[in-house]
Length: 116
Length: 113
Image 1 (cartoon, chains in turn brown, cyan):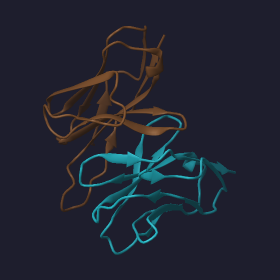
Image 2 (cartoon, rainbow over the protein chains, first blue to last red; image 1 turned 45 degrees about the horizontal axis):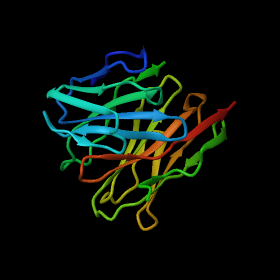
Image 3 (cartoon, rainbow over the protein chains, first blue to last red; image 1 turned 60 degrees about the vertical axis):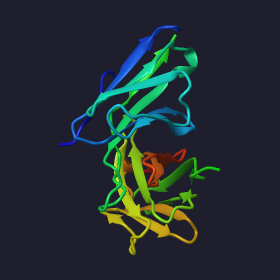
């Protein structure tokens, strides 16, 4: 059974703290993604990684950084958390597009982060 | 310009009836994939159905079908025989060859008993 796991379902942090969100997949996928989801805005891409140690900025990278030292793990880092980063964070993974098609994403359960 | 547009923020459907959720997309690539995901109130994103741009036939998966109209750049999701468990947010997404996925803002579907 394919699986994407995230380190926490709920997290409460204080303004200015450094926050780490971890995502692990067991499907040997090359691509991994971090999104934030806010009501009425859908999913917005923060960063994605198409392979180990590779990363690309998404639509809203400001205030975030990422790390991918191993294929199965993709970490999202909030260097100095702010209240406007209170949101649901979703991690996903997928294979590269290939002959079989464009390959769907598999999502983790999400982390609901509250920054006070 | 928006890559994916979902114009219906909320929809209601009677149980056992069919419902169509609209999705239009914007791309100049000849090769791309279209996806629909379901997000129940519990929050997990569940993949429902996929359509490749070169697929000749509309995709179907059980009660889900994708009405793909390439010239109109639309990829509407049709749910037949709605069930109470279909109440959820539904997201349309597109993937081009650049690996990134683009999502719409979602449609909230409520199934009425």
